[in-house]
Length: 218
Image (cartoon, rainbow, N blue to C red; front, top):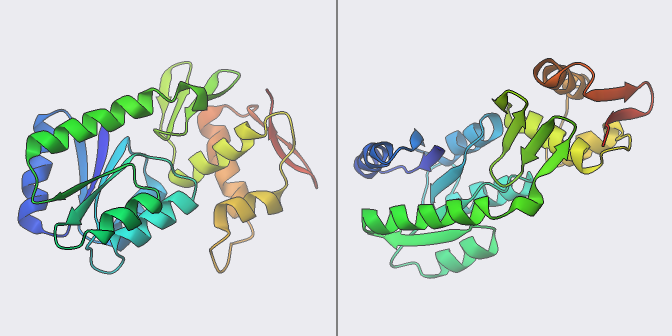
């Protein structure tokens, strides 16, 4: 499983990366909030370990932004022992669990396993249209030949279209859902994402009608 580790402490981050890789996790390690947001925007992860006290963008803001984008990836917060309100704020902002520093590796691994089990139990959230299915909790897309690699924006677009399967979704609705907190959106951004999805999923999976919008069939 691909895991995003967001930890600015170099010694802790390095030791956690090595330990997690020994337990079959594929670890992407970043050391500040901006790098975390960039990774979550462009890559798909099965789980995230997120430190609260980060440079540039703090962990709570990373968490809020991620949930605002519709990304439901399981997130485990790492909080400070002397700041008990961090865990409350984190859980209220959409964290799935938390762990107080310093912590035992075995407890961390146990909490990760619990989050994975919880995620895998959300079978009712899986969306399927034709030969394509997506798991919103894991941000995974699957086709006939197995998992399909997509970016975070492509996943959000596909999820929106599949949630409204059988109905055309206008370009303005898409841009509002995907970019509501951005200051500006380039005029061809939606078309580029649609083009990339068609290339990965098959050219006829996403229908379009000029002046109306885009649709996937049920």
